[in-house]
Image (cartoon, rainbow, N blue to C red; front, top):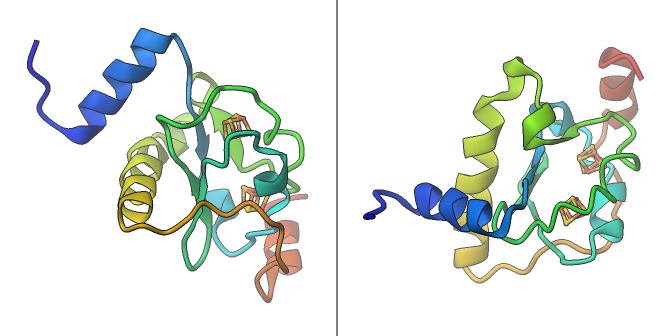
Amino acid sequence: MYLISNDSLCYATLNHRNLMPHVVTDKCNGCKFTDCVEVCPVACFYEMDNQVVIHPEDCIDCMACVDVCPVHAIYAEADLPPEFTKDIEFNATQAHQIKDSGTEAITVKKDPLPGANERKKALGY
Ligand code: SF4
Ligand code: SF4
């Protein structure tokens, strides 16, 4: 079977491993508390200006990050609410771009973005 894109290759590989990648939704946008990055055993979080994303091929489906996110921004792909479906491709595309550029994964917690606590309240947490 021929695959037509890197993302297709990604999901084919994941299916072969029977793993379900986790996805950072845009609830993270503007927060970036980064509690998640320190618990990930395989360093698969990559940092953008306003949020982090998960590399779908590197995620091992351990769920360690899910409960530590103060705004519950991370879901297993199978549990993703429909309004966040777009974030599956967003995580894959952005994480691939950042990793492929040679940038290391983020593994150490840093200060949240200014306004993160207001954003957290606005999200209902
Ligand atoms: S803990 Fe949650 S809000 Fe903070 S960076 Fe991770 S996913 Fe984003
Ligand atoms: S589910 Fe596990 S491996 Fe995947 S991003 Fe979260 S902590 Fe990392």
